[in-house]
Image 1: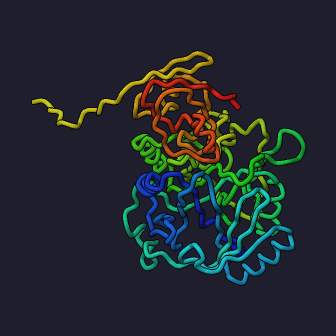
Image 2: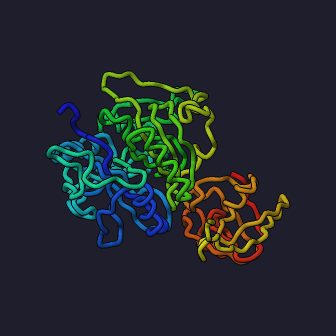
Length: 309
Length: 108
């Protein structure tokens, strides 16, 4: 296997203000499936094209936003290596025993990022009952519904000390920088898009004064026609639209941004080019950020920069 | 032949209230099943920021000076218990139950 260590972003726990409304949104509109409830009332979800027991968890809370993002790694032994390398880098980390709060998950290494976000790493996850077929596979076992989200794809994180967080992602997690938005002055970066595989991005990190903020969580759709179907469902279900359907200059992804019933931004994402480790970094000047994000209108709106949960 | 509308198929009647913003003096109408922000956005008023429209981001915070409201769930990160007692709320999470008077906050 050419991809080693960190494989992909594969788990997120999100805070919601109204559980019934959130489940309706993520299941009936976005098209995830409910796997079950935890003893403390959190709701576990997954997309139809994922093998993991679950990849997305909703927790009822008084504030919106994310509790943590999780990454699947290639082996249990790598977790020990990652713990040692994280400590050597200087970030605080601790262990969570298997099945602590995520049914089906093995032990997790929990790292507190300098941006105020929590990254969890795990190697072992139970195989979902409802998953892609393995023998003479059809394209799905059960017909996808709603926006037909295929998998949890990525998240854009807003927080301080982004340069240090990016350094951890590249030096310790061995992620690759795919694209960067350059600061208007100096040699800093406003935003960095990072991947651990061929996938366009697992995370992006944007410099922001408040810690631990979520800009959006992205779900993969199959193609541009699926994006059109998603746009129809946004209107039919009176979902709060942010922007799109459109294309990004950055990653070339086809996309729509909208908000869940608690104000957490979602993205439905399709396309984009494949990343390979020998590819150079693509850079955007700050005054071209409009084209980078909103490739067709080429105008950056205030809401995209300042509205987070 | 014609199509006969069955009972319950017509839009249910919602009450319409007048919302007054003190400064700059502005009035608009808002239905009882509509949020203040949705009514302002539809009327083309750009007096408060339009954010997530769902109570999570906090950019549409206002103060309700007088009137009865129905409050939808909104993030405590943006409206504390103390602020709630003093009428502060996110405009995207307030449905009117009477005519209302609002005060805008500094547009940050």
